[in-house]
Amino acid sequence: MNHTGNDQNISLQEFWDKCLAIIKDNVNWQTYKTWFDPIKAVSLNDDLITLQVPSQFFYEWIEEHYVELLAKTIRRVLGRPGKLEYRIMMESNTAKKPAAIHLPGNTYTKPSKENSFIDMPLKLEDPYNIKTAYAIPGIKRTHINPQLVSNYQFDNYIEGDCNRLARGAGQNVAKKPGTTAYNPMVIYGGVGCGKTHLLHAIGNEVLKLHPNRVVLYVSAEKFITQFMEHGKNNAINDFIHYYQLIDVLLLDDIQMFAKAEKTQDAFFAIFNHLHQNGKQLVMTSDVAPRELQGLQERLLSRFRWGLNAEIAAPGYETRQEILNYKLRRDGVTISDEVVKYIAYNIQSNIRDLEGALITILAQSTINRKDVDLDMAKKVMKNFVKTASREVTIANIQKLVCDFYNVPYDKLLTKTRKREIVLARQITMYLAKKYTKNSLKSIGEHFGGFDHTTVIHSCQTVENLMDSDNIYKDNVNELLQKVQMASF
Image (cartoon, rainbow, N blue to C red; front, side, top):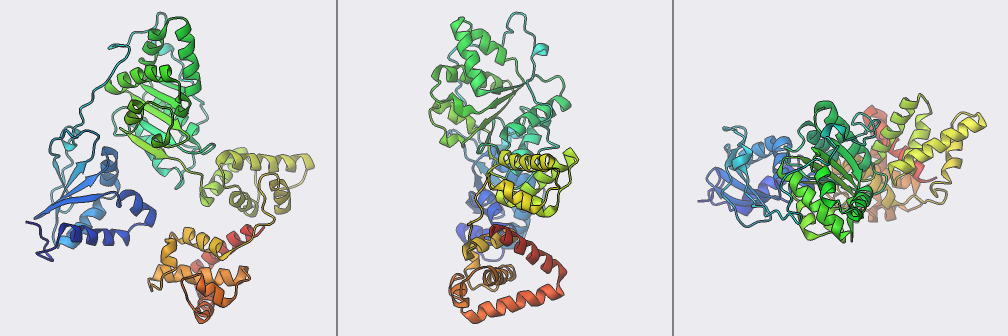
């Protein structure tokens, strides 16, 4: 019998819709889309709610970060504490019933991994029929050089929204290699976004915490070259045996495997052996595994077993933090105005950001002049074209939405929700100040408000700036961002 304490006849979908409505008001939009939108409510029987989630990793993340929110939400909708059961979606149809997990507020006991999840029987193929790792003659585990760059550490890997998931998961992997749900871990993203840095940081941290583990970093290109050389010498088995000695294998740029069919066969054998024996695999790719071309489906399927974590281009605040870190590291001081200008105009990746900073500092040294905004503008002409950039209402709307973490579509509605009204008023104020649009035109850009609403919004912003210092600081920061966009 499906019911709740508030409504004896409420349906499963009505119950879950009410839960999601509450959750939407308590988390930002991106968090909701990432962690709650994929969840499906499967059943509601008395106090037991069953939710279907995409993976074991997904379950662990929800349990670690949002279980209290779920508990309070379900209690609120049910009118009493509830019990929560997860159903994990796997690639196989063979399953056994998952154990119930009770939410906080009742009895909360996290079950062991042995009985918490749907089992997925694995049929592991081994084209080389290799069951045991044998050392290459003369090579011992202790002789393997990890090939790590010592400067790439977690301490100097700046965290931001662009990499928070990947960085956090990487730290967990380093603490407990081979024993978490993040095995394998595939880190993907564009060029220069910090994938290789994170890969080395994981390896360096493993060696700090587990000095007896054998760690190896290798690029896919080098892996392919090694395989071809061993093939010429009829020593493929030695090649595979060597890699089976590794406890933590860090493989960079797996997209390079495309069309290297025989190399993929060898890596498949290595992957299976390491994974079956509780060894950790971390890989990087320039695209998500589902978008990789030219790789065998059996490899792509295994890449989906663990965690696929994206690293995006760093946001504005993260770019500022990266620049400030590099300046502190090198003992160099330049004005915040210049840092913000560089951070705003270099939006592609970290390498370009570093290149712009190095070039500006080089010009300062060569010309024996302090770095100022005029110098930065001259140097930056070689990196980006900013002179003809025009500020539009759409630009300003995006800036304000990002700043206040407000969904763009909400900005265009006539809701009286406080945070939406605040963002809309400031956006109208900035649009009047920095664009040539009429008051009527500005109002139309917000879903049909008239010119009197725009006038009222501008007056409200000016009044609040006079009476609220925090509000004034926020508006001034947005003013500076818009000014930079107009260069």
